[in-house]
Image 1 (tube, one colour):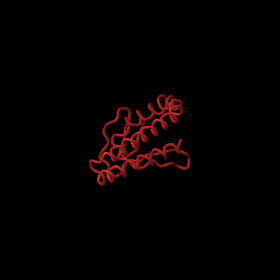
Image 2 (image 1 turned 90 degrees about the vertical axis):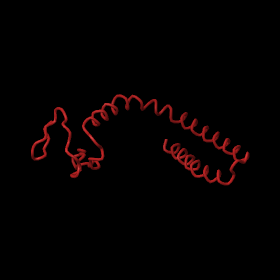
Image 3 (image 1 turned 135 degrees about the vertical axis):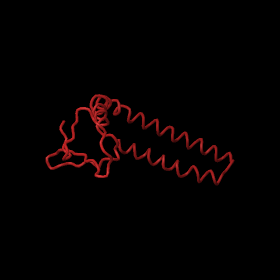
Length: 124
C-alpha cells in the first residue's frame, strides 16, 4: 500500500517540477507538446494502476470509516469549536488521550449538556 503511494507521490513531484522547466525551454514546440501528452498518459496509467491496486482495500475499509470513524469525527467536531484553539493530543500513562485547550484561546461557546465550573473543571 505505502509503496504505491510513494510511486504516486514521486510521479506527482516529477510532474510539478518538470512541467514549468520544460515549458520555459520549449515554448510552442510540437515535440514538447507530444512529450507532455506522453507524460500525461503515463501519469494517467499510473493513477489507474493505483486505483486498481487500492480499490479492494478501500472497499474493505469503507464500512469502518462509515460506521465508526464518521460518527466519531462528527461528534468530535461538535465539541471542538476551532481546531487551532487546541494543543496537540497527549497520551497519558493510563492510555487516556487528552486534547488541551490553548491558554490563549478565546472563551468557549456554550455547548449543550456541558457545564464549566469556575475552576475550569467540566461536568458532562
